[in-house]
Every structure is written in C-alpha cells, then in structure tokens.
Image 1 (tube, protein in one colour):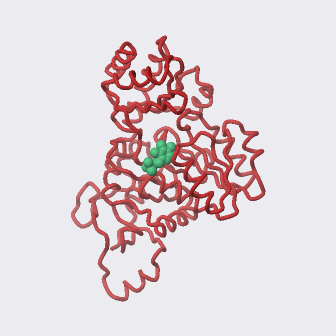
Image 2 (cartoon, helix red, strand yellow):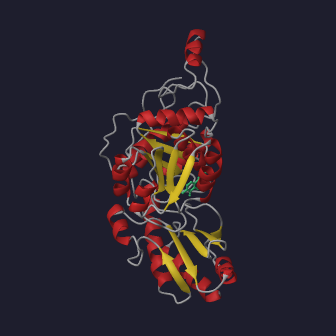
Length: 390
Ligand SMILES: *Cc1c(COP(=O)(O)O)cnc(C)c1O
C-alpha cells in the first residue's frame, strides 16, 4: 500500500497550533474520512508476487509512505511521525513503543562499543539505567556531569566521545540547560547532541532550532496528554532518523497503531494544553512559594529559580507544567500532604490533563508535580487545603 506524503504542501511557517491540527494528516484517500483512520493491521497485501519480492529485498529499508508490515511502518504511525517532524522543525521523525525505545534507539544510532557518551547528572531514572547498565554492559562508556556547568562538560570530553545526551528541563530538579551553548560545544568536539524534550514539548521549546542534532520524547507525557498510551519519538536529520528507524525495526521497538492513533488525537490540542498547564503551574508555584509550610519551589517561571533568566529567553511561550517542591518536615509530612490532595493523583508519569503528584522520600523528600488542565482556582484551593491538613 502506498500513499502520497500527507500535507506535503503545508506552509512550514504556520503556527504551532495550526501544525498540531493539520500537519501529517490528510483526508483519507479511500473513504474521505477527515480524521486519520486507525490502520490496525499487522500486514499489507501486495499487488503481485513481484512487488512482494521487491519489498522483502528492501525489508529494514524504510521508504516513506510504503507499507508492508507494521513493525517496519504503518500509515497511522506515519501520520504521527510527519506531525511530530513538523512540530519539532525536523526533516524526519520515527515513532516507537515508548520514550525509552526512543532514547535507546537514538543512543544506539550514534554509539558503538568503545565509544564514550557524556550525559546529564540529573536524568529520568530509567534513562540512567539505560546508560549506566544496559549500554555500559555492551562496552559504551558513560560520564555524568552537571550540564549547567559548561566547563565541566568540556572537561569530560575524551578522544572517543561521540554523543552528548541531556534533558531540556531536567528530571526531577528542573535545571534548564543552556541549549545553544551546549550546541556550540558539541559542534566543536564533533559530538552528536541529543536532547530529551519530554518535560517541555515542541509547544514550548524546539531544541533543533537551538542546535540539537536529535530530539527525543516520551510521547506518553505531554504529547499524548491524556495518560492513555505509551509511545516515544526521535526527530532530526533524515540521515540520523534512518539509523534510528533501522534500530526500531531490528530491536522490535515498534509502537502499536492504536497507541499512535491516541497520541495523534492528543497532539491536536498540544498547544492549548501546554498553555493551560503553564498558566496553572505558574499560579500554583507562586501560591506554594507564599506559604510558610513550603521550604522550596523549583519552577523555571519563578524569578527565584537559579536559571530563570535563561528560561525566560528559551521559553517565551510559557514554562511548562512541571515543578519540584519540598515541604518543611519529614517524609511523613510529605505523605500526609500528597494524600490530602483531592485533585492530584499520587502517580508516576507526568504530562497528563490530570494533575499528578510524585513524592520522592529517597530523594531528600522532593515532590514532583505535573500540573494538569483543571481550573486554576480549584487547583490552588486544593493545594491550600492540603497544606492546612498537614
Ligand atoms: C517518562 C520519560 C521517559 C521514558 O518514557 P516512557 O514513555 O515512559 O518509556 C524518558 N525521558 C523522560 C524525561 C521521561 O519523563
């Protein structure tokens, strides 16, 4: 089965909300369905035996818009890939089974045994497991540094360093990386510069515009936005994405078409959700900072955040929905506070329209908040009553 590149005629100067709705999707050619259908199929019939031989010869060689098996490519997933590429301003994008599939296939596209990778000190915990256990055991060396300290990053470069992996806004400490300065450093040392942009989404930051080579996301989070599907994406230059696709195919990291369909549906409101969550988060952060029970609020939108000036430059459209806080008191106080919240579920994950709270007793009682799209006054009132309760 073959389809033309959907919306190839779209003006790339369109705004983010317009692209979220229109990019990558076109009226279905066989039915005129306006929304991209869910192509819930493993395989696609060939027109002839010759066409089959031709395709099998090319197995593992992705050709845009040509589909023969859903591990290698699927039209619903392809629409999502085109939409994500448009939003990140990338030549191409590859969607996989999870954010970890995206991180793993991106890193393996640029690192071989004997190579060295520099990565942030503050990273999503499973990304650390991937680097420090899964990849290290295969002969890839990893050094973690504080990537807000450019001298420390430069000092970590070795002759065999091939990649720099950072998070645009770090988990869980909310450090803001100086993306353009790190890009200059990566260029100088010929490193492939990979940015995990999960915490911000292309609605607030497009790392490729600031010199990144690859951007990765857990699409499970803000991109999908409804906490109902696990998926991941890597976006960047076609030559790099071809290698990522090869890895996704060979390692079997394909996403289910249904999950692609759910993420595609969620993406159409990305800008609206990020705007609502950013406004809510700023209001909650300002409120929490005003309360004596709260010892620390780390939100890049607050002037008290150590990287606020840089954040204001990089994030003109809002500071996102993520923050970390710490209460006066012990783990028990933290537990009481989390349990008293009526509108925040205690849960892992983030980027949901539903506000989530994640207490971390093993990380010095830090509490990560992922602020959703509820009404601002309701959220602030809920945090007020929870502080009163503990
Ligand atoms: C959740 C997350 C991931 C992993 O994504 P999954 O979809 O859960 O596999 C990677 N990076 C960051 C920053 C995340 O928050």
